[in-house]
Image (cartoon, rainbow, N blue to C red):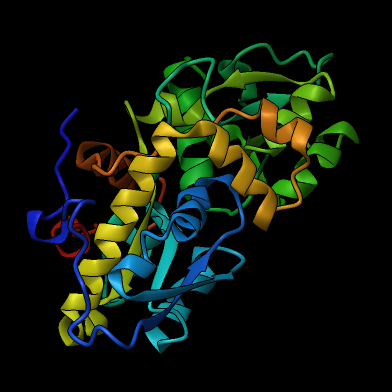
Length: 312
């Protein structure tokens, strides 16, 4: 794995948080997030005071996904946003002026123990990733990180990924869609993964694990305009975010509790779900792999993502 630390200038010690130029006026910051397990560290970091200690008055606002959050960041509705890296690479190839400022979430890298996988009903004849060829598979967004990584699982298992029929269904609706036979398989992340397992479903492919070791799945980003106009704010946000990621990684019980403050996940499910990894390091090699997979799948049209422009 080739991993790179976020810019040293943007990474401060939790013992000495950066302070705003004007100590008396905290900066109001709104972050566009998706209300899923992945963003638990930012909620926990707010509770622990990692942002307020750096003069940031933090508010989270829910978006449907990166496609909605990116325009919000560009318009100034959000100062920062959370998105999977494929959506950010797609935006970059389209000339959208954004840049990653902090890591977001990563695969556990464990085959059999990740927070996302391809599921089937318990009595399904599908036994492996190879068997997904020719089948109808649900993903939350077409031509994105889901179908790209599922294709890689099938390819590595010896199947023909070009014969898969992908269907766009929201994660919360996937357990019912699978149970009712609307699809043969569903790629889901937590907590839908635990819901399907509780229904008797099985995982036949760990697509994040198959795509790349310790895959960086999503990151926090800002507009180039904000980075040029207020680099001090970006620095303080990145520091607070890194402290939040580190704290969440070491306090799983508190993560499971904070999930109850911004999701509808019940306590039993929160206790059962597999948590992702929250490293502060961005695994650039894994993003390069995603870029190659996405290019081969036609996600970026005839363009190639310029990761030197997108990543820190």
